[in-house]
Image 1 (cartoon, rainbow, N blue to C red):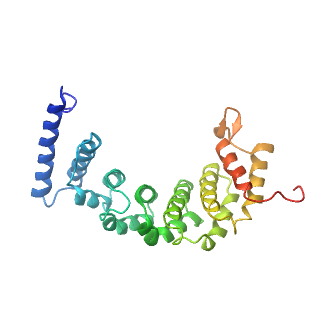
Image 2 (image 1 turned 120 degrees about the vertical axis):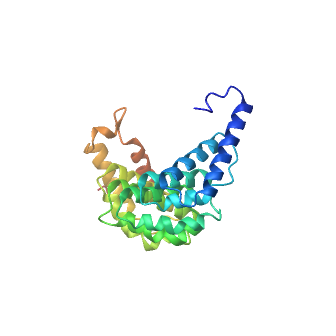
Image 3 (image 1 turned 90 degrees about the vertical axis):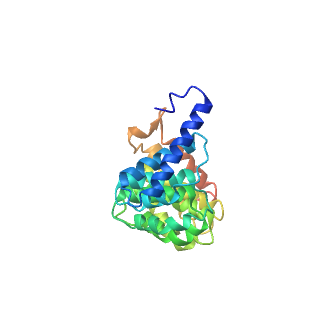
Length: 257
């Protein structure tokens, strides 16, 4: 509210400088700061950063929030990670273990936060350390639908960043099985992953063609879909485009199915 009441840029800058000095002193003097205050101050830092002010402190406090067992605090730490870090930053090494702990946890909300973080800032180092856990989430029979969707897109991100770390030959069979999935959201995410890999090398993905054709038949001819996925009378147009793009990598069948 103080910033909104500032009538000039100079007033705003002075207020921001004062608040930054206050937060810095709190981080320095309160070694046993509770999670609520740490979360509050990190949110303020992020807000000032988004206003365009340079921020050069608070990094370790945000890292500690990522390790918090409370979702309200953990989500703030991950928000800081998404906004403040870039691929290659040294601080990423400090949070890899925390991200892995969340990836393999039984808390789906924590798993999703970890997957989002990998998609935002993950590079080769993340691929080397976390790719096996991400693929396990993607292909596991017990993974929830909304987690599987994120895991598919996270796998695509890591593959694009470090294709040599994720050789498709090791997981293509399990991913191809997901093309038989009935859930439209999962199908769309997995199709994005398959297309991303096939754009580099389509060999080994020949089984994707009949699966794509069967899904198109189900959606377009048999009209087997929920009305939630109708867009101006067209069922799942984005998924249809992905499936048609998938078919273009292979020659048409000699006989009609």
